[in-house]
Image (tube, rainbow, N blue to C red; front, side, top):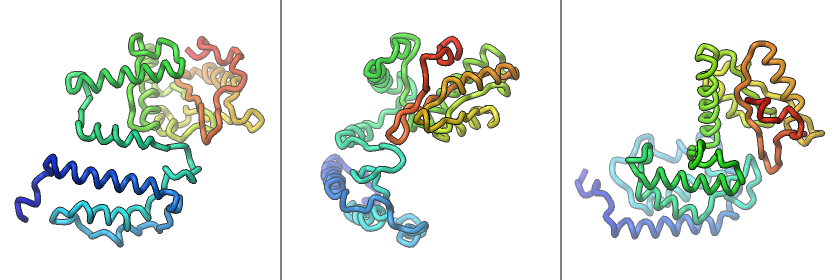
Length: 269
């Protein structure tokens, strides 16, 4: 292999190829309605189209884009299509692509303040903006006892908050009580809560999935939640976590009759 093949792009090559990549993405969005929303391929289709091993020499960007056009896009379910209505809304912002490009270019590593102070501080500021936009109490702001952290996925966020709640309770009752901890959700809640319980060491039988009814538009009943909590406390268990499903498939679910005493803060502390 010739040494020139392994040289990284210089600034001029980056500029040229980046323009071509942006044109490719712009054309994709311009023509996205022409694609079938659901991929029409069969399982294993891509293995028949790609070589068994990685190429030994670099390929041109045009060759890569041609492969994407002819081999990858047919296997894509187009979540950004205006005709896509499955699962949940996941549309990204076209303007956000530019932010992604900038982020990838700078490639900050922000696992602590000193590694990239701007990353840590910008995250805190923007999440405070979000908390204020949602009219959350001041306790959720980084200027108080709260503050947010961006997670990679919703499932990851569920796991993180469950672990935080678990550790907070165990500091009070002792680590040996982990087998008594109970989490609650409705039957409309995403399965990520049950997966989080498994990862967090919560016994599967201590993850209470409470039934909802169509008569309440599948909202979690405060009465059924209060009854479940009372039964668990009477059995010597320790309620520690409630996951509220606020939005799912375009409908809103949370507590029905939240004015009742079952939904007061004191009952859940």
